[in-house]
Image 1 (cartoon, rainbow, N blue to C red):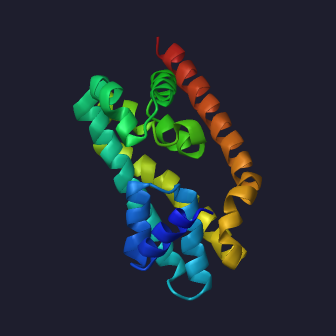
Image 2 (cartoon, rainbow, N blue to C red):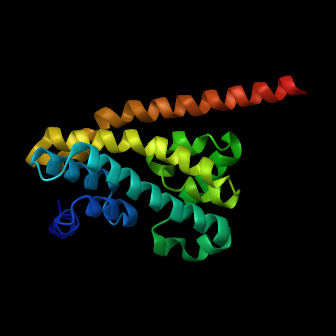
Length: 198
């Protein structure tokens, strides 16, 4: 773990729950690392488990709402021009747009567990003017288990919390596979429903 990242984490977590929320809002450091460090703080008795989860969910949701609004009011032209400054890559936007167009609004939930499109999926949701409340609900429902997982891993790792990236795959790979299966099933059901309605 780089010294700069450690310094930022220390600065954030000195603020307790607010620091975790802010860390996920700005995401200078990957959310998994912030949450794992939060788990370490829980293991040290500095903060509580439920509070860490709530802070993670609030911060992660606000971050996605921000991206949603960019998509909704800035659109693709804005993102093509300024996306790089927001650390949003063009090919991630392309992929998430394709997924959203193909699978519909339900992908906002399941795509949260797939690294490449996890954050970018909020962009086409905004561009398509997906109902805001529906977007928030699906986002929160996806962020809750993600936050629980990484805070838990941070607790288990304790002072070795920075190893979370090395062991996370054991837990996240099955989740990603399940997410892809859910997306596929959603698409099949949606397609069959459309056929029966004809």
